[in-house]
Length: 422
Image (cartoon, rainbow, N blue to C red):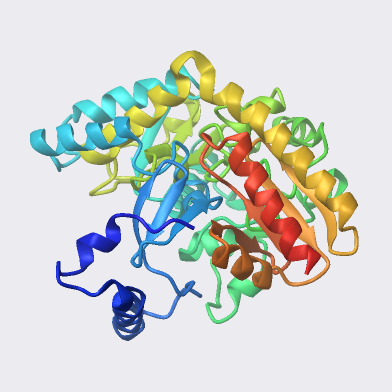
């Protein structure tokens, strides 16, 4: 891959070009050693240091170029350093960086209006991350049930294979035992049922149940889609039993599946929805969206966030929302290019059936289940200038920016063919 002008930024003018690679690698190694020394060991980090990004591309500290099919795990929906997001942040940083939620914040109001006018919701609460959005959604569901249904209602049904975050209640809601180990006792009140099994869900409802919480497409669970009418049946069960439906759209929201929110594909509406990841176009922000009768259970003193909805985050998110909604171009592009990408992966599956089990997903949230561990393929792709991600051990997950082109997809497919061909 190309070496960018980043190389020139790092070296003195008198540097011998013959020593270039050695010097850069030593600098790279020093940074990685310091990362291991000073940062908690909570991630299996790839041995590169990313320093710059533009659009679909990122560059490491040596100047090597990569085409990014991870996109910050569905965060960089407009690509890296989108001009509108950058300009919005620059302008807002010159005006007001932080103000307490004890006062009205103009960028927050504008963003809330955009979200309400383009979703099922009537009210919005802003926080800083997906896990916080889930925590708040859990609190809101329990508070609503105690206010309007019964004091004994607190249980929430979630799906096996789900992932809702790393904070303790979000972790307890997550239907994967491997994430629970070492953190017991978990927060009580969560019941796990098989994803896409409507009969199991019906049987799990009891006198203490107040809500059902699901991802429209499971992300960390291996990019798993439900059957076409599953969410409609879940909505019906919730209505019949006076339960709230919470949708975790942290990964599926913000155009990722070809519509602004994934629930739009099913023709139903949730009562509460959690957003984060792509909402800020790369800047951290989370949100809880809810219908009026549910949102009214939050009153002053019941929930809060010091940094939630801060001016910088809301400026970035407003720029992201406006860009996604502009003439619907990006959403149309996502649907079209997502179909193209999926078709390319299906062709790859036919050619390498001994390696590939199934292609799953919608829009630009796609998964390729492998017969073997996916990490070696991730590593090979990285060496060849592509960033991809593996989840559930053997599922390659592709969540590129929504601006990805057919040419970039073709290059990735060619690379995967070369890897499998070995």
